[in-house]
Image (cartoon, rainbow, N blue to C red; front, side, top):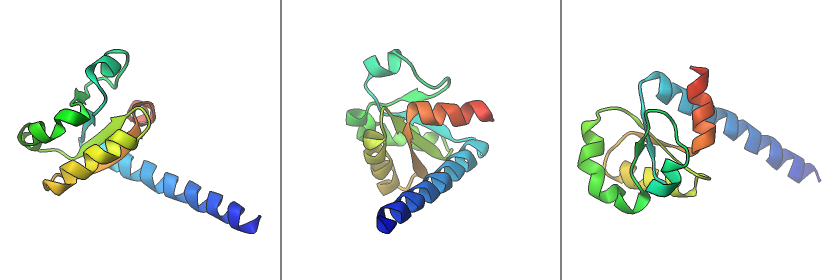
Length: 111
């Protein structure tokens, strides 16, 4: 039981740190790249975000680099955005996985 409690507490601490990192990226003028499909993006998205579906992200590396800003990736749950962030990181782009677009949107609204 103690172990489960401790793991829960550690998870909460990591979540708080990630939120701080995302907020820091937002304050630095990050561009939000939503890696969901265009249909998903059309049903709701963060104002000002760019839609680059995950299956197209490798083809958009140069365009993303030209934005010359840190990047926050997002999607529906955080799984595809983690993959997108990994791809961008491999190409030398400063990026963080923001997780779900609704979570990132709530952080953008705070600013």
